[in-house]
Length: 449
Image (tube, rainbow, N blue to C red):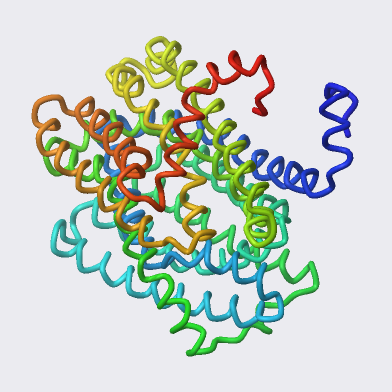
């Protein structure tokens, strides 16, 4: 253990090899996202300044459309497959092979929709058509992220981090070069698409380097049917989740303008860039939670509360910091053309508190075999978001969309949980996290955070 850590913390960790593994894995995931946070922010600034609000809005709108259609690629399988590999390691090749085949079929379906949508809404002479087409091609690289599921199940995310970070850096360098050369929005779109392709190639290479081979994967129709029977709820849940996350930008494009989308997207970039943190924490702890769920119920409940406490603490600190620095920072980085993004960011960043907590709820539904609640909650969020957007966007533009996002995230990730007996204990745990400072005072600091 590093000597710079407090003695009591070193002693607590040294005697717990499982905790060490989780911390190490979280560290790798965090390293990848911190790299993206720093370099990605720089690239975002360069691209936004180069393209201007209107063309940057077109790019952001296109990425939102692709995010909608990615539902047909991910198919809600990721959590299921990781769980099943942990439970049934002997079926690894069948699980990975079948998952890859299902995801590739989903990529084909999604790309056909992109072509049809592009032709119907824009036509081949519109540059928005070509941006959609170019970025849409990246969907065919997504099935190779199946390899990442294996590394997740083994708590060895460092290998996925190496592949994805390398791809990100190479694509980032290409974007910077294209900005320097004065490329159009279509040229920038090519760089965004290539990132997924490079990541896929590197994942395959590392997987083979570790002594495995995708050639050993097997596709079984019975397994595909079994996975889809379990995941149909997650497919719908994922679709409504993306609506909740991205519908604001799509509706801004339809009800306002590409320029408004560009201004709003800058705020969203700063707000959502932190969402890697809950994902890294929960992803690393998930295999251990699977084991505790089987054997130690009291320890399992304790760990859930501890993770909620950590997620709330980190999200609160981030929201406070961003609120204070937003107004001077946005114009400084993006020029005065994006200055109105600051007021949007100050609202939108507080939605992150609920998204942090949501990360653990999203894994809890797998642990408790309660997938239906994921679907209901996402439907609730999507319905609230779309309804409020229709009312607020015409009046307040991007700020209205941010308010709708905050309310919908709170509704779907917290208040919804109180309405069902199965999820109510989780709502109580979240509430306990929200009053964490008072708990610390009451118990004189003897609260694990």
